[in-house]
Length: 225
Image (cartoon, rainbow, N blue to C red; front, top):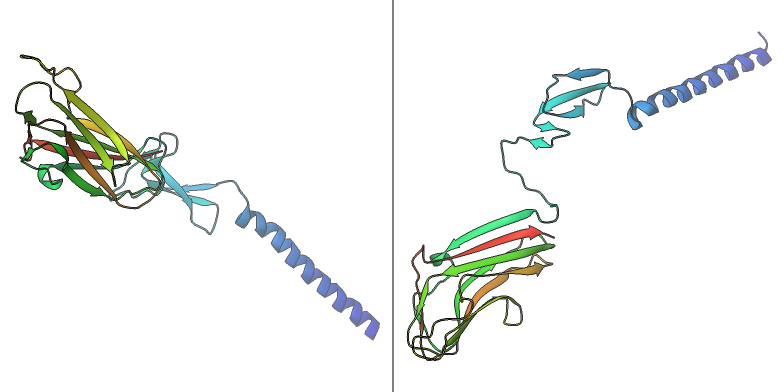
């Protein structure tokens, strides 16, 4: 065979090899990068997560989830990192001994009667604070009292209640009472927040707060916004 004929054979062989390579890429690309029909389902179930086994047109049903009903069954805890608006992120319930609630007489002036430092879980949330306590007030009429929920300092007031007594014999209270009290703080950081329950006494009569576990409580609810 002449050298010219050998070159033609060699050239045709190289072209055929290149074409086969191109054909292989053309056929394999849809399987690895595009959607393709499912031909086999392993262990089908009504509640399942379906995943490919990575080797062929097969999905495996894993019990736990229904696509349409979004039913999720887990044996361990769930720790999400994102929440829908209004969804509860965390809830803390505290009794009197957990919030430094004082079983004392609160005299004239402004006093901190309960406090707790809460660390937010989300940097885009609302922190709802609810506080209630049993109390009684000594003395006569004409007195006024105010309760507040403050976050970090006196400039961040998120809740307020007021109680005023009519200034004559037999006069009762004609206002909202100082406890329970609630409020919400708009949070944008993971910085710990000091929650303070304040009581302002503008009277010469003391307010007695009771400190047994069932006498006072604070509930903190963090929700997404």
